[in-house]
Image (cartoon, rainbow, N blue to C red; front, side):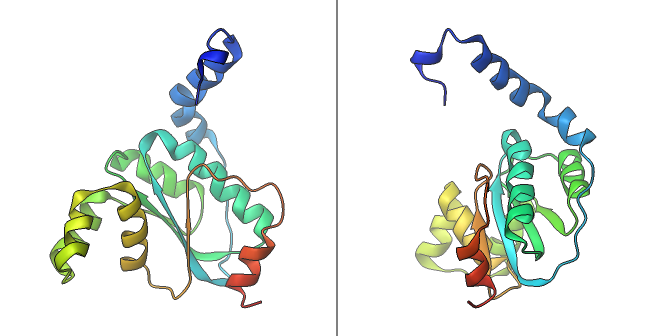
Length: 167
């Protein structure tokens, strides 16, 4: 993220420090975003504690620019989000739920009958496997949008909108 070419630029360090250190404070002061679900899909994001503020930005930019209203936004905890932060996260956007890593492990590894390589890969905890498998296995919807915490939307997401609404 920060290359040697910018190592002497104070503004880079200031932005890094501000986002890294004060994201929890910024999150607590953010007003709640309410919406009524109108589209039959779920949005899934694998998130770590340090990316919570970015994930909020990503979700809000998606909701604003896409005009889509998912029935659920599910945040998959990588194991670093504590229960207090999860409650604050859930309080900022309606229909958002944080799935703790331990709960996901218990449901997927203990209650589902996964076998062979799938079980082995899921148990490894590799982030890409968690993102894809958990999104599929813990979803109640036929349509799933898997996103990253660092994706921001700056214009209409027509391709996504057409796919979800069957265009």
